[in-house]
Image (cartoon, rainbow, N blue to C red; front, side, top):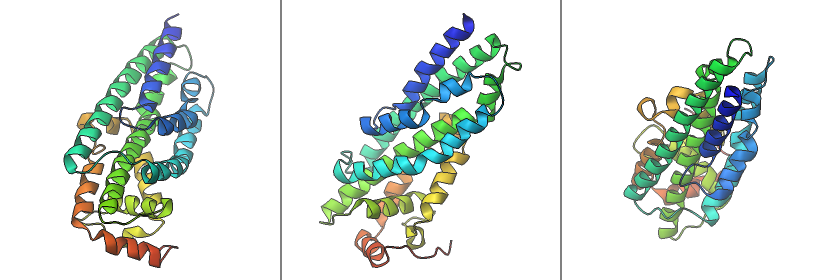
Length: 247
């Protein structure tokens, strides 16, 4: 009975994690399609369940970015300044952190009630697999915020971009390290670096005191404001295949 209650609490918290405030419903539906089976995996005995969850985490981001790039081109969030980005990012961070807190409580309760291999659910949480899901969700929120702000700024300059172009520009804005968008980050391989960064984070990074997540879109917004967007778009269009990265 205790385990059943813990499972129900976990499933409810997982739905909250996959439907963060401030993310379009289409993206949330895609997150649920990608990660909705994790609750079942977490509470199933036998070997390999952590590996299966991690495989889902690794496979999901490209498909999620396929959807999100279209979303920000066709229906960007109403973000015209840094304050708007900051407010939306804060809502998303609070929503994800609350869901992660509920997930951790459910996992601890399930571990205490479980007879499966000495409480493997707790080991799963400590191992960070569920935290990796939260990191991908948070990364997707940062991408949505950054891409939406970028598209709004480009519209202000009279520049329309397609999905492929906004995808490369947004990736570059998030991955660049300096004060402006690094032209070398326009390469298509930048997305792999970005996704590896999301997947590489664990459960600590899903909590407000242990993460840079949620601030990434603010930093990217600052880079967008300082960059020559017309030049960057021209560079992307002059080299649609992407140049080899020096960084």
